[in-house]
Image (spheres, rainbow, N blue to C red):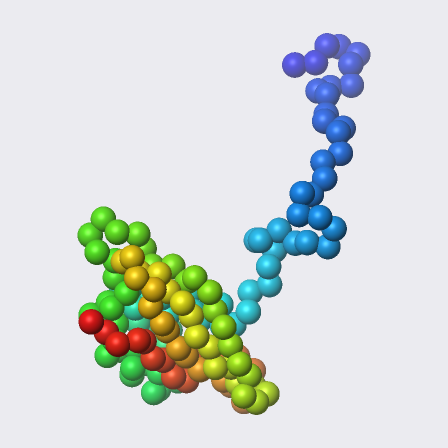
Length: 139
């Protein structure tokens, strides 16, 4: 509470500086690229954390059928008491305009797994869609 006639609570006036240095963005402000979003969504589906139908509008028929085959066995599901799988990094190449071929390193159950997928822009509305999905050899 403040005293009558006072200006209210004191505010901090010390200027804080960003330890990351000039021109560096905080991690949460990083722009989300389509390959990053798709990698995360594919890991959620392949670990059994999300049902395959969440990607229904985001995957073309061949990729959706492949996910429908892979998802029931949840190949990226962690062992009981284990950590949830996490995307360790995403790499890509752009073979042509409107296409991305990407791979993700996924840590799951103490192992590093490989996930590869292809994205293409939908010709009518420009949305990215998954066209192919491959997971390393499933044990």
